[in-house]
Image 1 (spheres, rainbow, N blue to C red):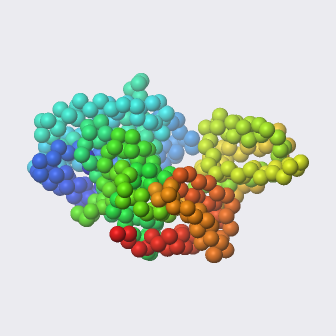
Image 2 (image 1 turned 90 degrees about the vertical axis):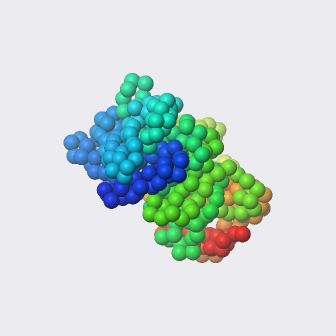
Image 3 (image 1 turned 135 degrees about the vertical axis):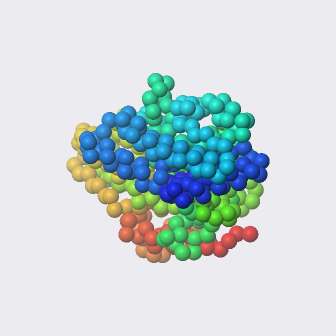
Length: 403
């Protein structure tokens, strides 16, 4: 299984290079399925056209429009493979029969009928699958959300029980943090599903989070590598003994959150349940939550949500907060969530304390904290993002390769 992102198929020449890789793998005796994204920038162009017609387009029609980007790429790649002397056949999501739910623009895969793909492979074809798309029970075209081609590739690999799902991209693997911010960042040779899942959810952009979830559930070995070289990339695999020895595997950051602080609300049971219940009923997710209260006084409730949800959520928050007795709400969009992730946190004490000391040493104030078994996240002022990433990365020794 091979998957190529938008940059990797961003021009005819690059599509020809992808074709050569696929033909070469097939010549080695492998059965090859290639999942492709739209050419770089094409999805944004298509969605832009829709918004020129109407500011808030119908979601069903958006999916019809957006899916054409991958349709074009898959056919072009099939032609390129044929021009290289290979046999190729392209398949759209509904032709493979990638069945999804009906949530347009963010559908989830329910099942994959792999019969047509297996038949094509048995007949010696290289199967080229349009990523990012499927169809619901009614036959409507659906798309899987940003980065959905990763999800398509891993899901098809799981259905076919592929030996490996190679994710070809414009970087040569998963790094300990963003190399654009921290020059000492280094490529990780192997990382666990759980660590990759946390990094993806916390802002790392290499793999789409749902693709990692599927890989972990079905134990699909994922190899993230560059489409512009033959160098070994990063393997995303099941946890093993060696992985446990590293206390912190990577540092991630996410500038996409907004912080909401509700002041002076009633300090009584059920307040949090009412507020977050209303927010959830409107399909808005919250992340970090901090509640502070002094007995006999009014309390404060602080939480984060995606900036993209904030404007839609404000009327809901303000109406509910007023009902709960709040006199003031503070919104802050100039925040960043910076996180450390590592399986070794399970057995190494003091990791969180060290993170707090490193940030305090740079006089970086922590606005909120959340933790899981293998990660610690801190909300900080956005102006300190790059400094925080560098100090945490080097403070935990991630600039030095572990042997």
